[in-house]
Image 1 (cartoon, rainbow, N blue to C red):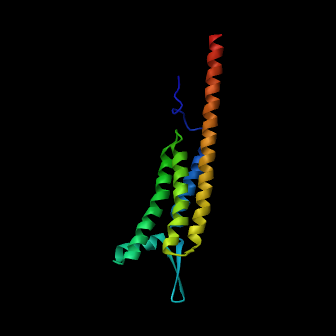
Image 2 (image 1 turned 60 degrees about the horizontal axis):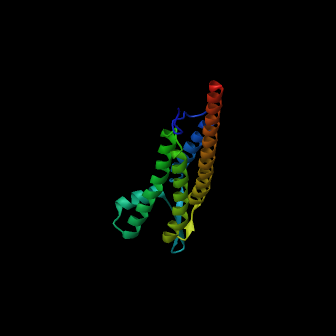
Image 3 (image 1 turned 45 degrees about the horizontal axis):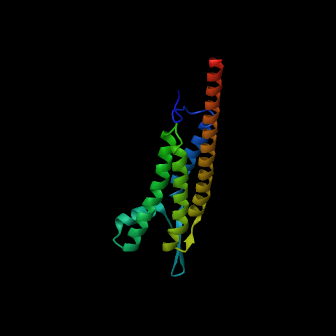
Amino acid sequence: MSSSFASKENKKTKPLRLLLCFSFVLEILLLSMPYIAMVHEDMYYSKTMVQLMITMMSTKEQQWFRLGIVAIIFAVIPVVGFFFAVFDKNSLLKCVVGCICSFLGIFCIVFIIPQFSSVLAIGAMMAIVLYLFAFAISVSLALKTLGIRAWQKQEERLAKERNEA
């Protein structure tokens, strides 16, 4: 008797899992693109998340410290999603974590960044699109995995019925 969680990675699910890993790697790389845009004294400034983390450590101003904490949150979200997608080959946990990380990433970009800057830069916009893509991949991977498990259970049941007859 097989457990529903003890399945091996299927050749149909492996490309989707690798695509999910790749999308989280791209999210990590997008941290080096401008996320926050500011206009101060008729000058346009854009800051990346990496710059905000470095600025947080080098300055004592409260605003930059808060932005640095936000930048660390933005860095942690795709890293967690990536590690779950890489190391979880058998269960649906990677799909659940992928959906949660995608939702958290979009939520943070849409609701937290506007508290510090009224303008989203190109990196933030590209990150939203990529998080939506990762969410769709996670849902697709979950549905495909559930379908494969149901098909395997049906085959086991049919084989069991043939052996009993």
